[in-house]
Length: 142
Ligand code: RB5
Image 1: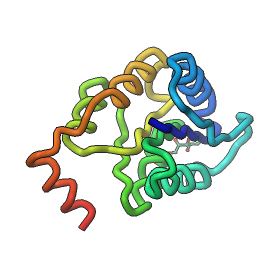
Image 2: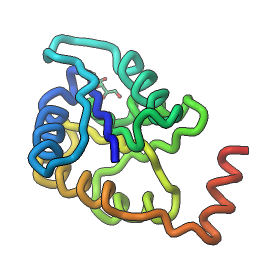
Image 3: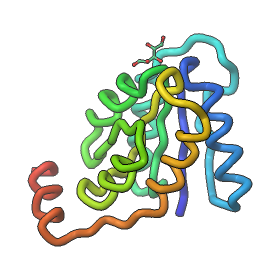
Image 4: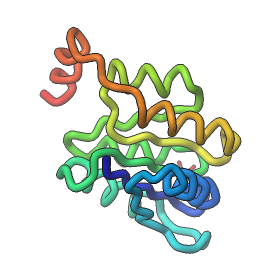
């Protein structure tokens, strides 16, 4: 599975922790940036990351800003993207099972690193259930 991770300055520290954790687990992860904690505009990172997932170049994307809200709003503008803003483990599991979300958004100013890493782990390792949920996901695409 190929994973791409991006942030703005508000999510910079958590992005680094997520990338580090995924690398330690031996996963194929690309850090899209930014490379410093200087102020940037979150849509400039959300759009290209979302496009790379929508095109199939990457299987899943993770976007982090201060709240996760700007990142999820921006990513969901890209056709084919189902970005879920998640700050608890129940939703991390449910959004994979029910929504087949392909971009995870989180807010560094909302949750701690330990919970965020658990959310990423659950989100990456939970399969879409299909069935009745497939019909609903198709309706989103339509
Ligand atoms: C940046 O200050 C902040 O607005 C951004 O990280 C994010 O929270 C936007 O939704």
